[in-house]
Image 1 (cartoon, rainbow, N blue to C red):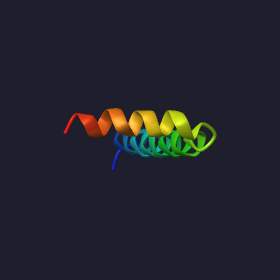
Image 2 (image 1 turned 30 degrees about the vertical axis):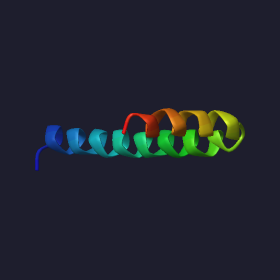
Image 3 (image 1 turned 180 degrees about the vertical axis):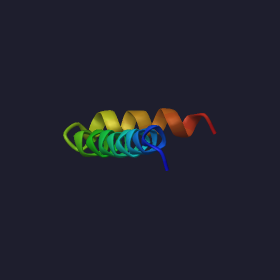
Image 4 (image 1 turned 45 degrees about the horizontal axis):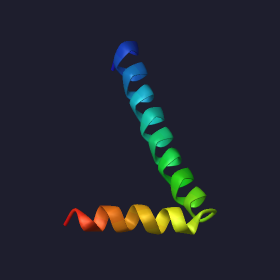
Length: 48
């Protein structure tokens, strides 16, 4: 594996972990405002 491929794979992995971290942060932040979480869940459910 050459350096460019290694760097690309490392960047992809870092981006994936950052995305997972951001998703977890949003979930944990939603516990601070349960009414907002309920409203968003209701709106999402109404699409089905």
